[in-house]
Length: 257
Image (cartoon, rainbow, N blue to C red):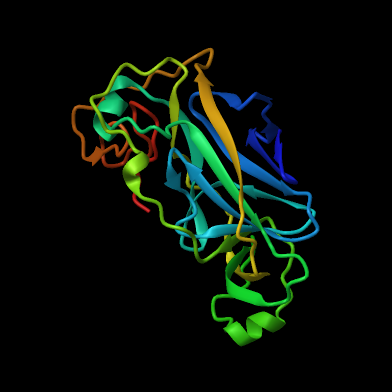
C-alpha cells in the first residue's frame, strides 16, 4: 500500500492486493492487474494515471469521490475500458522493436484535490458507472443540478499534455530479467465511464510512483510459432495469424479495437 497526502494506491492481481517493497511491486510476468485508489479526504480528488510514460485514460482524468475507493481495470478508450493491463517481460527483441523508454515499468499517479470551501463547479468531467445510464447529453446547466453518484470509476475530460522528451530510444541493451512493460490484455472488462463534475481544483498536486518488476511463473505454456502470419505485434514486432488474439511471443493483445 502506497500512501501519500490521504491518497492510497495499490495493485491487484486475481482480486488480491499486492504488497510493496519500498517503491517496488513484484508480480508474475503475464499477469493482468488493476489499480485500486482510495481517497481518505472529505473532498474529491482528480487523478492522472500514466504507465510506462503513457497516459492510459485516453486524455481524461479519474475523479475519486470523498472517502471512497475506485478501481481502474485497464486502458480506457472513449467511454469504456477496452483492454485490461497486462505485465510482460521486456526482452531485447521488444526493446529493439519499440525502443527503450526511461519510464518503462513505472506507474505514475498524480492526485489533485478540490479547493476547500469553493462552490464553483467545473462540468468538463466524467463519472464512471457500470450500467447503461446515458449521461452523454447532459448540458453544463443541467450538470450543475445533477447530483454526482458514488461509483467505481470516474473520469475528467481535460488533462495536461506532456512532451516525449523523457523517452530514450537509444540502441537497445539487454534488459534485466525482472524488467517489464504493461501491454494490452484481455478485452472482457465491463467498466464504463459517464459524465460528472468537481469543484475548482487546487493548483498543487501530489505524485505517487509504483515501480513494477516481474518474476517468471513456475510453468510456461509452449505456444507453437506459425509460418503464415498476418498480424504484427505492436510491442515486439512478431507476426501472428489473423485469428490470433494474443502475440505468441510476448502475449500482447492483437485484435483491433
